[in-house]
Length: 436
Image (tube, rainbow, N blue to C red; front, top):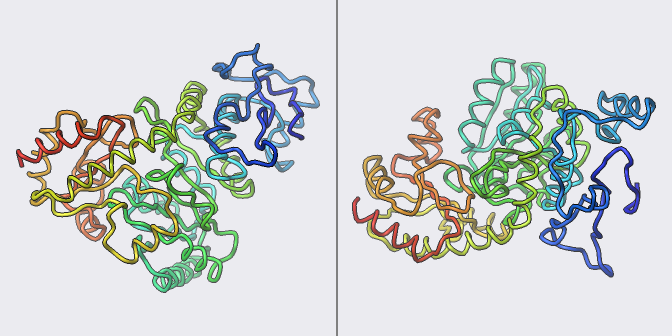
């Protein structure tokens, strides 16, 4: 379909309703977010996409219906040519997926009802009995739990490596995984990364992982990465060798703490198996949430830039405070290996970081309970500043020994800086630290 063609079965879309180039200049995502994938002419001239609250779509002809279902069921590659049923696709979700793909330079993207839905459907689409998943650590506790507890019930094993692992260490883990898979009659089905890791901000060397995968494994094993902490502005994993990028859209992309959603993006060959399983299981995000995410994508760059600038100022204050033992902030890395990864992979330090207070849980709780501006809540990437205690909250389900191994200590507080005035935030942290 050319840039000027209109799909008659899709009432809202021309595939590229706005130009992607002007006189040879590639337009930036922040520009394309204002209209990409949507033609107002097809929706009564509405400047912004309406919310399409419908469960099903009328076909122009029976032949069209047959052709769409051939795509949906996999009898013909490429998916449906038009709109079919809202468990499969719908206008708001398709516009959203078009725009999400733009940010990461991906060929295709899929939206889901939550970040964990995206992760679970992704892994289920690629894992079979006897297979092994290789993953970095730390992961978000629910991600790690899904691999270790849920997939294990279906005969899927895993082996992990620390986020900062060297090429040699990654090679050794992949060899171990191959042996495990061979013994079980399976294969290494996925390398799953989270970088930066939650909540320590530890970085994974994506390029080293790709080189190790290319040498040791079959190309049918994708490298997927949860890019929630830095994406879509401060890291582009597909540029460094990842095949699939994963987001909790709840965080920076949604950015207002008023929705829950997730996504994956990559080439069509990696997306198609996941799309097929999503068609069966459901889990696509709803039209209202998709519409809200379209709103949020228009300002994601502005919000993330402001939050990043605030985080730099706040961390400069915290780094010199007598009650702070250390910081897990990407703008103040002390480890040479981590700094090397940061310089190769990252475009900014982000606005979510960990603070290590002198003391333990009691001191962290006192600090958290005395915050006035920052809110005591889990999640991150919103317009407001949030603070939480991972060891007793988001990562409580992780065994204590495993938490220690991953560096999730009792004196760690995770902070996500918002877009408030930076000096006000510093004053708030200062007064809360006085009570510790």
